[in-house]
Length: 320
Image (cartoon, rainbow, N blue to C red; front, side, top):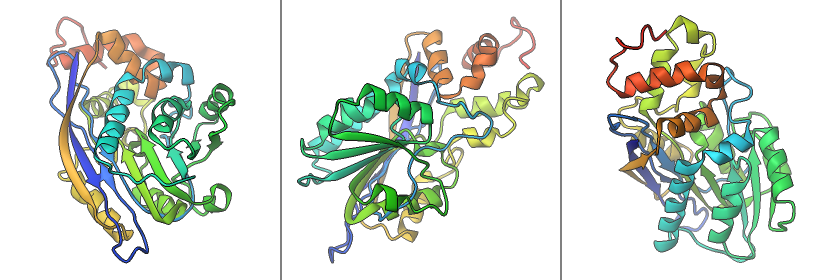
């Protein structure tokens, strides 16, 4: 089952007077669904300079347990892992980022730590020190337990969308900040990016990758109108990327970056495709990020299948 999408890239920006060297690199994926599985995505890569505050991924109120199952998430992270690996390879091949001696690095939305340790650490110089943060206490617990023997990395619970908390006093400043598949959960992008700005050193850099739009979002919106599902999805908008349905999300990101004093911003939209081996694999991928579906997984799978086949529900009965 293929999923396809467009990607948006926001590349480097730096202050010629050397007061700041922020870079913003964004990539979005959206796309045209295949007949059997339309899971499109908008991935965003960001690169910035910022000074201090709150860090980690925000999740919607409808499910305090969303993305709180490290085992399920790790077992179904294939699409996300591939995109992160491709982004880091591109960054390496193009010398997009500077590598400094003894640099401090932050990974926002680190989850159970697998991507941080298996992809990000090898990408960085051997003397780099990494702090991984996530909003989920369970994800941080698993990350600490799994990678406790690695002296180069530590994990802390933190929320990048938090207001009024000077996370910089706790975490300090960073030479580089990364975030993969996290910022589409954040509704208040301005607060989050201001907080990132505050955590970054004056000559720091940022590289982000996050979802901007997807056909699966359209499916969530539709299903939320069904009486059977509405009680689980009362605030469905908070399950969607804040850029979903926007005409030019790249322009919005550029504008936000500029208002926060980012410089040398490059933004590009590109296609992306992913093929799931089966409907079950697609379902697991969705369940890994939205466990509320587990309550009615069989019924949701039927709805998903019907939608992917063009909406013909005559042989399946009522969807709601």
